[in-house]
Length: 237
Image 1 (cartoon, helix red, strand yellow):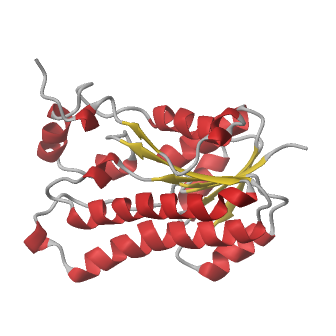
Image 2 (tube, one colour):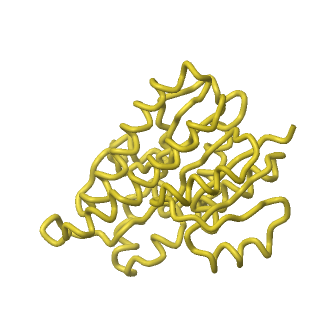
C-alpha cells in the first residue's frame, strides 16, 4: 500500500518543498494550508498531491482532515509564522501569544490528533535554529524552543507505540517569511550566514524525507540542525 503523509503549511516554502519531494518519492501526500488561494495556485502545478484547507489551531478542523484520510504514516508540522525582528520592549503581549498559539499550539494539536489515529509512523516537527537563542526575536525563539521540548517529550511517550518524533531546525531559508524583511534586515542576516545567504527549501525537505524514511525511523527525540554550520558558533578564521 502507498504510504500516506500529511504536510501542513504545504502551499509554499518548506512545506511545499516537503510535499513535492515526498510525492516524488512515492508517497501519497495531502498538503494542508490555511491560505486557500496559495493552495489552489500550488495544486495547479501538482500531480498526485491532494489538498486540504486547514487552520492548525482549530482542533475541530484538524480532526476533520485527519478523519478524511486513510491510515496515516507520517505527519509533517510545517505550518508556522515568523515576525519582524524586534527588541524585547517592542514585542506586544498579543504578538507573543499569537506566535505561541500558531507555532506551539498548532504543532501540539496536530501531533495529538495524529497520535490518536496512528498505529506506527513518524511525526516530524519544523523547529528553527533560532531555538538556540538570539536577539530580536524573543517570541519566535520561545515558540521554537517549545517545539523542540515538545518533540522530545512526545518521542519518549510515543516510542513504545512505534511512532518516532523528531524535529528539523532550519537556518535561514528562502521563504515568503524572510521575503517580507526589509532590505537592510535581509542584508544583516545574510552577513551572518556561512553560505552568504538563505538556503533553498529543498535542503530542509531532504532532511524531512530522511526522517520519514525507514532508515530514519531509528532516530527519535532528535533535532537535526540544517543551517550550514552557523549553529557551531565559531568565528571564521
